[in-house]
Length: 233
Ligand SMILES: Nc1ncnc2c1ncn2[C@@H]1O[C@H](COP(=O)(O)OP(=O)(O)OP(=O)(O)O)[C@@H](O)[C@H]1O
Ligand SMILES: [Mg+2]
Image (tube, rainbow, N blue to C red):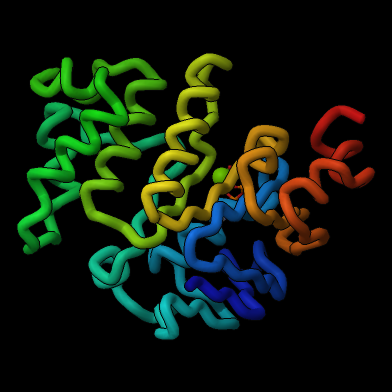
């Protein structure tokens, strides 16, 4: 469904991503894990069309998208929840969700609001509240709800667990699995290797801009390298 081939990304003269290749198949949860500064967000923003690669290809459902405009990419069924959530302050919860549905012209929008409220009941209770007054965990839910309102075939999540209490992390990860079960494919970017690999069909480990390991979630969780570097031994 998504194919990244020999990707290189530069910031000025500094190369952040080196020859990265990976793929996400329809129906999978694929986790990309790595430490601070490994290049996770750079890869996600490149897939979303917000950064142009200096080399390599990004294919979504067989079409090259590395030169496409970000809004075209969203309209084609690929949506991201950015790092740090970025809900729109000054807009209510409902208005934030509406922004997610902005590019849609189909008749299913109404049902999809209901689906989002079912997954995140707290949002329904707070529809008229300013998004900036939500707690961190609630903002993560709103950012996910907003992305779901664009009805993505592939959902990209950038560190959904960041800054959240363990109980919220558990809830968010179980909702990610529910979203997969309802037919959306997921690319999950995380520093929380344990959680991310435990729900992943497959995963990749990114170190200083290079993929150094690949395998099923189970294989990676059991591997010595991952245990030493990410799971505390
Ligand atoms: N706009 C930018 N200009 C220059 N360098 C950048 C820019 N954005 C990121 N970088 C650099 O690129 C590298 C990868 O950063 P990136 O944000 O992709 O890492 P990350 O894996 O998402 O890290 P984190 O887990 O901390 O979010 C880092 O060395 C970072 O300093
Ligand atoms: Mg990041």
